[in-house]
Length: 127
Image 1 (cartoon, helix red, strand yellow):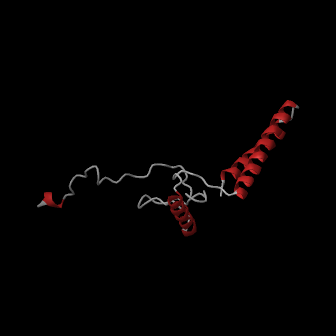
Image 2 (tube, one colour):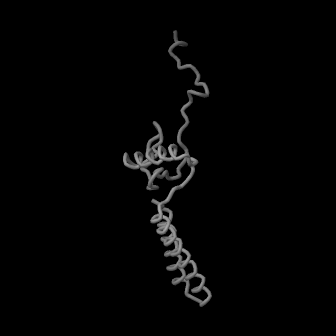
């Protein structure tokens, strides 16, 4: 009787694998950081229902258009905005090079580097 009460050994399919990744997870649509979740259940892919819906609409539009699934489609406005942000990032990098050649102080270089970091952070948010 005691043998029946004991749990049978787990097979490979039944084992619970804890989530080990401490890396922050981001929304699959807007890129916002997702809140930390517990170790149970499916991982979140989107920060909310609206992002989930936009991702669904994009997937279905891609299926209808025949474009590859990894294709990125941007409007003219989005491309122009992206080019402007890239230009700002390049100008900030050139400012650091010029300041270093002119013998700028370490504090001034730190401020310029902080500007580049902020520009790059803004550029990461494509949507």
